[in-house]
Image (cartoon, rainbow, N blue to C red; front, side, top):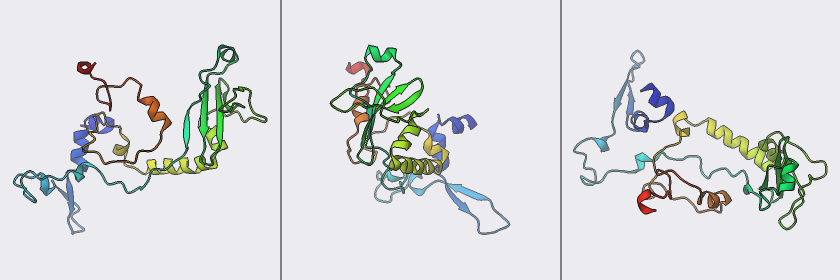
Length: 213
């Protein structure tokens, strides 16, 4: 039981503890015991709007955070990636493209020393670093240096995530069916188009099953 709670493998334990029980605290200050009772809609004989009419909303926690925080417009591999063999001999590992919230575009080089902005554009390949290039040990430090909006929103995103319950941050290994999940706005995402062609597990969305191949 303790392992299931700490690892999140048995999500039914989590669901039973945090969604099904309805805690009732006694009014007496001397008696602080709590009674756990299941919701009425799962009890036998519940016929609020019919014997087969069960609510689905309790399966989805309410999201009170509003729209998701946007830190970047685009961050993915550059069109100049991978580096050509001569640049690989000089230490270039990968090339990234960063489109900031301030509508500025940067081409970033990853090397053994860290990350820096190069002089490449969408039409011209120039792997040399820009004048007075800032070499950051991590990509996160470089993005904060280039975009004030990224630095501000990313810190807000971390604070919001830290305020969540630990079980809300546990990824679910089960498939989410589209007819039960709430609908989201379809927004442009450069990473999503690349993930569409990656190999997936059987439980993931758009996975190819052996009997369909």
